Image 1 (spheres, rainbow, N blue to C red):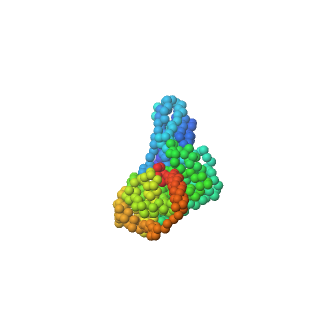
Image 2: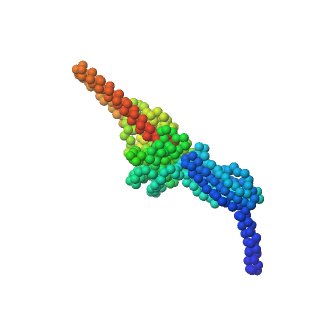
Image 3: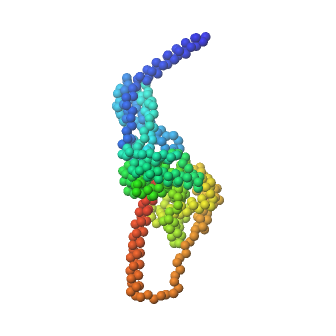
Length: 418
């Protein structure tokens, strides 16, 4: 009985195996490659032969990024049915932009007129910027890539990034949930030349879904680079924590920007002076208005960033990190900002506005002299001329400095904002 069973199994095996082998021998894969034409295209090439006409070829690919569900894209390259086929399909970055370092997994399905079918093994291609010889430094969830500057340059940038992550974890409870890659270009020109249709002021971009930050940091602007990277990491981590079909929509701008600025460390002195001026001139913007994208006007943008930083500091110092993390989780689940604030803190955005303003210190105006003193007419004319010159010089200086600073801030933005 056992012998008969063994012979039966062998007979079935011998009956099946030749068919599998026969099917495999009907299609031969001669070439399967992907070529990078950074930043404009990724070209997938295939060459195959068969004993009968090859009638169908499909490319399947998946881009490694945060998705609400696994997405597999399909492409049908053009070719003429034949026993020998060579064709390609171009992923045009003008239609589907991929950042430097994006990972794409791909495979092919080939079918013949005779009904044979071959599904190739999957392969992976990194859409790297091959114009430069990148060096790599990895610590924990962060990998930093750079090509200009010594090891100390990279070490200092990485140290600043680690401090930003530690600061966020300590004060807000947020931390990276996925790996983050940082691409440090040696200039904004180098960065922009690796982008499709960049804006003239673009100096940095955060691709939050891909976990990639690309930014131009010249080695001689290390201090600015540290703050800019810390800021972008703040955005990246916040968006990872709140990633959901609702999070990106419901996350208020003041909270997003405030957390990013908190990641930088010590409050920016210039923005502090902007906030103090807004208080004395009664130009503060309501918290509810700050939920929307900030104004493109420099003066209003400065006030918006300064207030956002102050609001987040107010929440952290008065209510602790656990509530901030709870607030972000509620936004991720689909609660509106008012609903989330009310559940966590007991007040909505209007209530936050009122409580926060009550803590602000108004700078008193300088008292005017009570006595009038007569001055020599010549001295009065000289002082007036000097005062006019000083005001004009200061105005031009402040305007230039403010605009440069604003461009710096905007340059380290993701998309159109910081």
